[in-house]
Length: 315
Image (cartoon, rainbow, N blue to C red):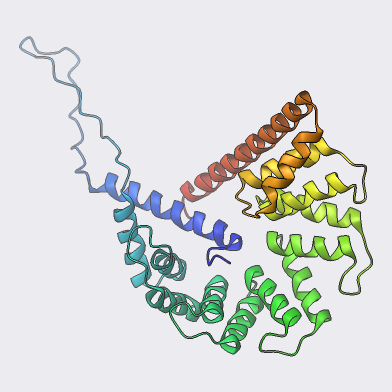
C-alpha cells in the first residue's frame, strides 16, 4: 500500500495552493514599487516627448526544486503539513534521493504536532519496515493515535489489524466497526472493502447487493480502480441486477485506465469483447471515455475551488 493516501489530498492541495499564492505575492512584493506619478499638466509642454509604456511584469512559474526548498523552509519553521509533505519527498524520490529514515523522521515530527495523517504514515513505516525495523505493535499504536484524531487511513488500517489479528487479538466485530467508520468518511479502500462484505454477506452481515453496488460506485467516483473492477463483475455476472455486458466492459476498461494491475483484467476484457457486437464495444468504449471526461471536469472544478479558497485574503 502506498504511503500517499487519499485522505490527506485536500489538506495538501490547500497547503500547496497557499504556498503558491505566497510565492506569487512574495515575487510581486520583491519588485520595487514605482514612485507615484506627478499630476499631469493640463496642456503638455511643447518640447514633450513620448515616453515608453512601463514594462509589464512577467510571472514565472517556480521549478520543482524551488518549490521543494519552500516546503523545506516551512517544515523547518514548524509547519506540520509541510513536515508531512517534505518527508514524502524522501519517500517518493522524484526530486531528491530516497531515504526512508529521513522520511520517517519528518513524519514523526509532524505526528508530534498532532497531524492525524502523520500518525498514519508513521504506522505504515513501522508496519512494512521503511526506515526502521518492522514493529507491528508500534504500527498499531500509531494507527490508533491517527484514528483517534480522525484519520480515515489509520482507521481502516486498524480494521485490517483487528481482522487479521496483527499485534492484537482478532476481533471481527471490531474490524467491521473500523472499516465501516472509515467508509463513512468516504475513504475509497474502506468503501470497497465494505462493499465486498455486503455483496458476499461476510462477517455475519446480511447479504445486500444493492448496498454493495452503491458502495462500489462511491469508491469508483473517487477513482478507485478496484471498485471499478468490482462493478464490472456485478454487471457481467448479474449480481443483484440484470446482466449487462456493455456496462461490464465499460467498467473493466475504466479499471485498466485507472491503473488496475490485476493480471486477470485483460483476460476479462478480451472475454467480454469476444461476446459483444462491434457497435456494442464502441458504445462501451464511448461510455467509458465520457465517464472519465466527466471525472476530469469534476477534478478541475475542485482544483479551481481550492485555488479560489487559497487566494481569499485571511480575515
